[in-house]
Image (cartoon, rainbow, N blue to C red; front, top):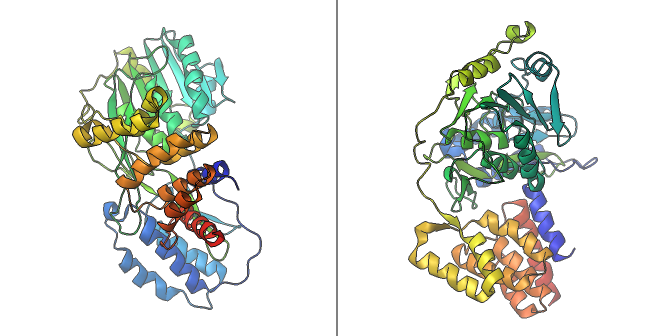
Length: 476
């Protein structure tokens, strides 16, 4: 497996797609599986303190329910009951036959929204679709446009798609953006869409990856801003329709909408599941997944397990939908017709206007070379630390790009800086070891790998890093 493929593997572990379940497994002690699940969450799950959960107390309740004689079906039910206490839509358990989700929408059907009703009645059957019908848009009235977003995908192309849609509806006096029943996808795609409606740069999210053991052990955050992008920005009244099945990346979009004064969110609370989540294979072949990053809005509020409240709450009942009436959409139309709902400056949205140190490094390295870029970044960290942020996620995501571009000097330079910032991060020396090895510097690679060869890994990508370090050192 070459360096690029290893970085691709790391990236794939961070996306929401669950790894496939393996075929028949040898029998594994149910007690071992229970302890593995409990320990994975104890070390990697970032929301215990926010939920007010005493995970040790939960162990005392559920551990005695599992014995060596516990059947697979019984174990699945016990684990589902325990994980259900987390109230988190990013927590899943799969055994190849069943799938349990710990979110508040598990087992519920969508009966307060009908896309077919919107298209037939409110758009009068006249609408356009783009990106494989991921975006559906048309006119609710002669002056009010409608944009339905079903999911967030193709982050590299979504900006251009939305730009083309806005070119068609830019004359509208207002737009209704409908993200009901949008259960998520790529958060970067959601951010790209939000940027087409930004009046200026505003902070709406801080994303802290889990750092390792310790319920409150987190890396410094990635600061996430909504800011103008594309050839045009729509800054007339916009109403965003949300409800309980607006989940994950959709909730990032809703948070961005909440800080824009000309955008209003109406409907019901969102689902309340945030951050990137990842799969973890269990000893018996089952898979458990969880979010590994802790997300808060610009005020420090975490909406995980709660859901983001709408600014104006109005909900449909299943009887409304059966009677072919969407009260939420009708209210949005009335609101825009009356001039829209312009909020005050969102608290905290203009604070902490930082720039990405990683992106600054890439820009400077392109202009002046890697060594000069490191000097500039170190100067900023020393003299203006509040003007920048240094994100481990951005470094790891950028590693793949730098590897593929053959920019190993730049990769080593920024990761040596990252190693100083986060000496306990396993993945940083891992990438350095691969980069040095690729450069034909085995002694430097060995030095990097020795930093992690005997470390205890907690995340699957860290397990891969430690295993790679041991393989390399055993060959020397």
